[in-house]
Image (cartoon, rainbow, N blue to C red; front, top):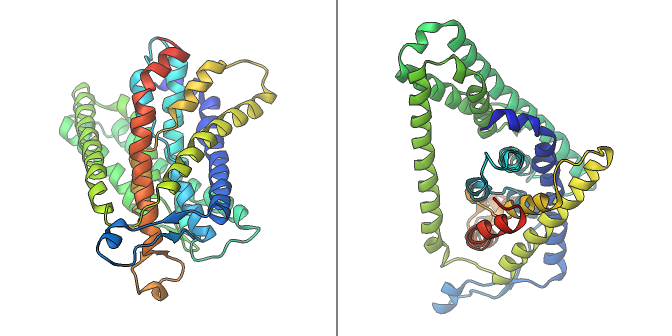
Amino acid sequence: MRRKKFFQNIGNIAIFGLCVTFVCFGIYAVTTKLSIEYGGLEMVNYWKNNNDESGGPEVISIPTMQMLLFTALLCSSDVVAAVSIVNYEAQPKLFSCIFGEGVFNDIVSIILFDTVENLQDTDFQWYTPFVIAAQFLLLGVVSILSGLIFGVVLCLLFKHVRFLTINPVIETFMIFSFCMASYFATELIAINGLEMSGIIALLTCGIVSAHYAYYNMSTQGRTSATLAFSFIGETAEAAVYSYVGLSLYSTIPTWWSWSFVFLQLTIIFGGRIIGVLSTFYTCRLCCKKKTISFRELLFITYAGMIRGAIAFALVLKINYAEEGQEASCEHCYSQKNYDLVVSTTLMLVMLTTLIFGTFMDPVQKFLVGG
């Protein structure tokens, strides 16, 4: 994280990562609901049809709250491709805005998904959006506060208990232990049935540690910690995307809908453009200073089109009832709808990565150069 430019552009980052995510959620939810209600979309299980079983086609029908859960996970974008292409030295503001949006978007989309997930046992009412907003704030504040507490304690230990900074192995272990402790401790917290997000606490603790604890570590400790967590991160990323690829084979004998896949691809593309442009210029009505050019704004819009590992990880968290056991979990996804959203999310991850990721470099050169 390039801390100086990150905090200099915190206003723009908050617009893209926070406001745009909420606007896109609203757009995705409304358009998906209308498409399911009036679009006549169908799903089919090709494997069952080939084995002379009942595999459809069947009309897609997803309850409103379950549909909101699916559109919440679609809000998570993957800006790794854009970050890897933009040169920080040549375009520090653009790099910071894209990277910062990725960080904020991860936090907001995960909290939003967890909030809607906790409301799955209720029916959609006119006041449901306000309940989602209130629980979003509660879950976000408590989870972030939990991560802050663990991060600040770690920083104070490194600053005042100096024998902990003698051995680089101990320093790396302390950072790893406190971050994981923040995750598990936050996962145990529940307020009025609303479970807090350990992932958000982990991310917050990591950001605080990187910003403050890093400077209280020894030179060897900084190098060791950087190498260790870089290795863990690269390994985890490779494992996740390998799992995404292998999952394609396990979803083949399940329920699919190519019309639903391409509909969601269109909604993501159109919703992202409308969400970014409308939100940015609406928020900038109260600020006459020009901060980002239109071409840079277009590239930021394009950079957030890709759906990555977080979206796929969130869809696997959805609770569902196996065929014949729907009565045991009334508000859970049915097996058919669960298979549908998993296969759709998997294809969205692959298609957006292939389509938008492939053209990321030429689009960047055309719009902003360098």
